Length: 191
Image 1 (cartoon, helix red, strand yellow):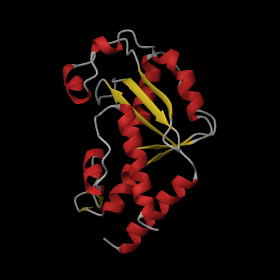
Image 2 (cartoon, rainbow, N blue to C red):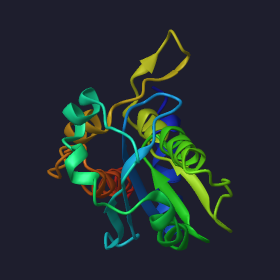
Image 3 (cartoon, one colour):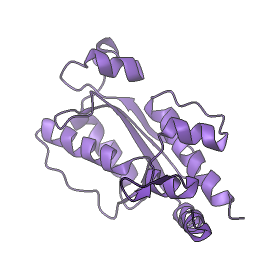
């Protein structure tokens, strides 16, 4: 890996931290085009919790998804719906840079959850989403010759590679805290 690629990833991490972003993660009913979120967490730039809630998906959670995150149908049956939660989520995101580990996935799930609830998706005013997984891949530096880019690392692999002690429990709050710690880890390598 050219040293300039790693340096660019570090510089980008430093730039993102200077924006004082919020961090977001979701847990879902699955990975397909009709799946929806069942948990969402948003933390502020300092690690304080802004939103952390289960969401009633108004559908059954498949067993294979439960095996990943341990969120059961019984756990979400009395949780608020997405329509009830969205105003608080929207307020937490409005005007902010939002860091997400695999932003393409989580933003797609939010849009799908909107559609499932017959809500029109409009990105909150002044919000920008940015990905942390792709710059981390560049920072880590394992080349994927088949795709001609740096190989993406799972959040769990990134945690281990950086020696971070935070858990990767596949629960939204833990994963937002881990995502924040990972961005800070990258930024601090340039100091």
